Length: 405
Image (cartoon, rainbow, N blue to C red):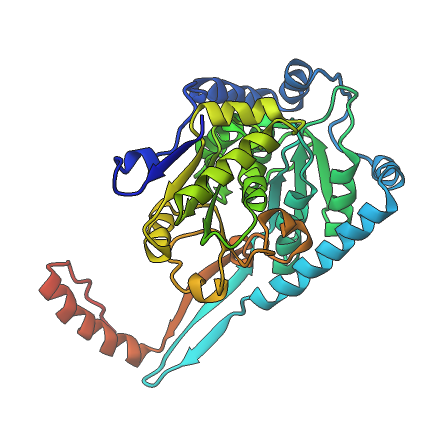
C-alpha cells in the first residue's frame, strides 16, 4: 500500500528505513567467484547456460555483431545517443584533474600526481531492461580520464546476443571490448581474469543483489566504485506541480526491478499528498512492468510524507539522503541551497530524473583516477624537518627514527 504520513506523528523509522533483500546471497556468490577464479572461461560459459539460457562458444562480442547492432537500432535513437554522449563529454571535460607541484623554501618540493586507472570494467545490467545510459555515463568519463582499456560485461539474451542499443552506446562511448556475461560470474571474471576476459584494476556500474555482493567480495583484490543498494528517489514539492508528473517520477524508480526500491515524496499539503497517491495508483496500472511496481508498493516502497513547510521538508530529505533528488517547487534553485545530502540533484519542474540520458551528468571523473601525494626533500631540509618531527612525535608518544648524515 502507499502510506501518507504526517512528519513528527510517526516514528522516524517508518520514513527513513530501507528494506533490504531477505535472501542472503553471499554464500552463493562466494561459490561462483571461487569457481570462476579456478576454472575461468569454462565456469563463465557454464553459468551463461544455467542463468541466461544460452550456449555460447565465445564470450567477446565481435565487430560484426556491433555493426549489426548499428543497423538494427533506429537512426533517430542513434542520434539521441550521440547527442547525449556529446553532452556528457562537454560536462565531464571540465572535471579533468591535473598533477601539480608546489616549490617551497628550504629545499622542500611537494605536489600531487594524478594517474588514470589503466583498465576499467563496467557492469551494464541487461536482465530485465536495457540501460544504454549506464554505458554512456560510465564509459565516457573513463575515456576522458585517460583509462587505457575500457571493457563492458553485460548479460546475453537466450539467443546469445547483447541488446543492440547497449552495443551501439558502447561504440559511441569508445568502449574497447564487450563481453557476454552477467551476474556475479561477470564480476569475478573482471576481478581475476580468464582466458577471454582481461583482469581490470577497477569495476564500476550498477547491478542486482548478486552483482553487488560479488563487488563487495572482490573489493581489496580489485577496486570498485561503491556497494550500492536498490535505486531510490526523493521528490520535494510545494504543490505547484502537476501530481501526475511527481507520480511518474516516483514510479520511474519503483520499476527498476529488484522490488526493494524506495520512492519518497515530501510535500506540504495533505490534499496534495492524496492527489499524488491517486496518480501513482492510476499510472501503476498502465505500466508494462506493473508487477514489479506492485512488489515495491506492497513493501511500502512508495511513501508520501507531509511536512509543516519546505524547510522541514528539506530537513527530511537531507536525513533520507537519496540517490536522486528532485526539487519540484517555485524558486527551485533557491530551495536547492538547503541540500546537504543527496547524490544527483535536479532543480525545477522540468529537470526530471528520467531526462538524465539527454543531460550531462555521469560518474565523476575522479572515480577513474588515482591521486598520490609526492614530496622531495633535499638533505638540509630533511634534517630540519626531521628535528621538527621529533618534537611533534615526542608530544604524541611516537617512536622517533634518528637520521645520521
